[in-house]
Image: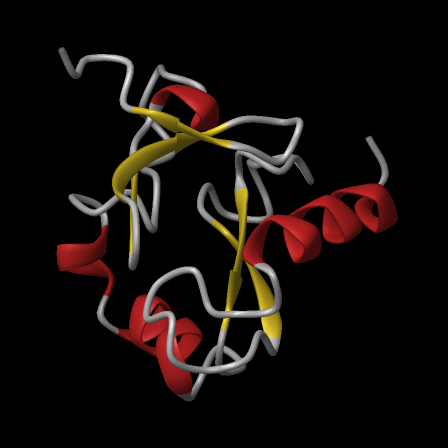
Length: 110
């Protein structure tokens, strides 16, 4: 998938609202698994407010520790793929993201 296609799918999924806080408009795309290791795929990319310094994107970039538990970041050594790792969404709670641009209930949830 191209970066352009991925951005379009993620923008549509988010409806223009930050996928972490739900309060601000989308300003940037964030790689859950770092850009060096992670693909441009909708399961790996989330739409956030801020720019890597400010807003939710800045929070995730600058205070990484707590955000691995929320699925906002993925460790490079995690053997699971991004679509298997739940993401804490402002409205839906812990959901899995797929590459079609949809949210799904966590795979380990009953």
